[in-house]
Each structure stands twice: as structure tokens, then as C-alpha cells.
Length: 213
Image (cartoon, rainbow, N blue to C red; front, side, top):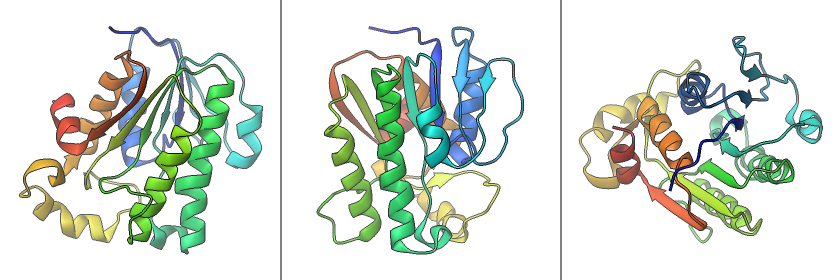
């Protein structure tokens, strides 16, 4: 069964995947409003509302009905500066955003996690992603979709050296570890938003690539 969402809440619109997803959302004829808070201004569009500033300040102030929420927030330990700062974004901010989206009426949350996410992992990055998924499950969403992409491929505003070096190799790896283009991932996220089902769905990278074709 498919929905026709009209009011969207999007976090992470300035990131690699978020930029592609925002462009797709603003060009969907069924969507009348995209609420996309961000730290820096986005290009103006008649269907876009873009509160700019500190998320801890504007999150409680977001208003209006929301049908579906997308969370594309994410950083790296290097960019964040420490493990604590990384957790503040990839766990705390994601969970706070989801809580506010639920308060605004959203019944479906689509969130970007990562391949290998596991709250018991010995790898800090994967453990935080797993704990984030665990926290979102505890919010008891009517519909929660967790996307676990492999290495993202695409041109970032702020290039990540590790991704640039790993991208050629990731294109050769088979299965769910094969790299995924950010534009392909954005298409997959939108398709997932149109599917109505109850409970939690985890979508691994190989399935995301198929959905994004």
C-alpha cells in the first residue's frame, strides 16, 4: 500500500544524501511543504521552510503537521573532533529529532544508519549507530525504516579523504558492501517513504541500491 505524504520534515539537508533527497522532495508534485532545519541556509523554494541555527534551540520551536520524517544526520569522529562530539550528533541529535517529529504527528521515520550498526560492536562507530537504532526502536514508532547504506559515493561540499580513497574499491566489492551513490540512496529513501507497513524495517545496502535504480 502506498501513501501520498504532503508534509515532510527533513534533518541533514546540507549533507551529501540530504541534498539529493531535498531536491527530490521539492520536485514531488504531492508534497506541499518541506520543513528542513539546518545550521546554514538552503536555497529558497516556495515549498521549503528552512529554520537556520542551533538544533538545540530550534527543535522545540518547530511547528506544523508532519506526515513523514527523514533523518539524514551524520558526521565522522574526525570532523566532530572527538568520540563524545560524534555521539552527540549521530546518537543524541538523531534521537532528539525523532522525538520532536513524533510530537509533530509523524507516523513514519526513515533514518540513515550504517552498514554494520550493532550496539554490541567493538567498533565505536558501529556501536553508536547500533545504539541509535536501539533508541529509536524504544520510541515505539508506528513505522520505522532504518536504512543501512555502505560507503556513500558522491561529491561532498567538504570532501572526506577516507571516502575518496575507498570509493574506487567499494565499487568492486559485491553484495551489500558495494558502494552506493548518494543520488541512488536518495531515490531509495523516497520509495521507502511511500510504502506503508507497521513496525520496524531494516534495509541493507544491496536492497537500497535496487530500490534506487
